Image (cartoon, rainbow, N blue to C red; front, side, top):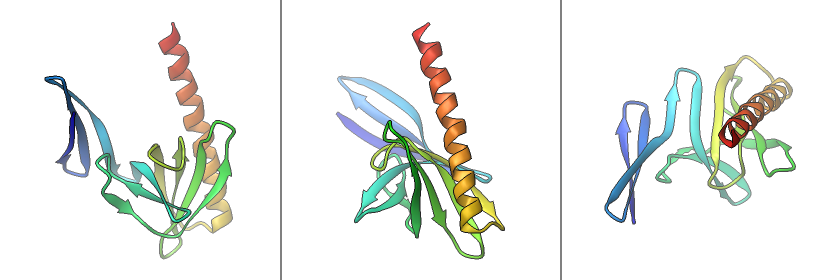
Length: 133
């Protein structure tokens, strides 16, 4: 089995070749204020990486909420009152979906991370229900 990434602008395509067949899916991307990436846990700190494991973001962060299914809401603190807030299905190797916010303190960023977590959790649940039909 072979896996690799193909860059396309601010996004990537993750490719897996297995038993003579090729499979591809959307990987990490930055589109406007929105980001999709994968979590990497390193020294009790969450980092964001591409599908192939290259680090995209490594800065101060706090897991603000932990959910019973292992999912987490995370706030990455940038400079000048900017934060990347979002939701990951877990702390290591899992999909992170978030967005850049500006002009908010940490408490408001934490609230927005939780709100995004609620939003994505509901979308994921809807997807699971539609797949079961």
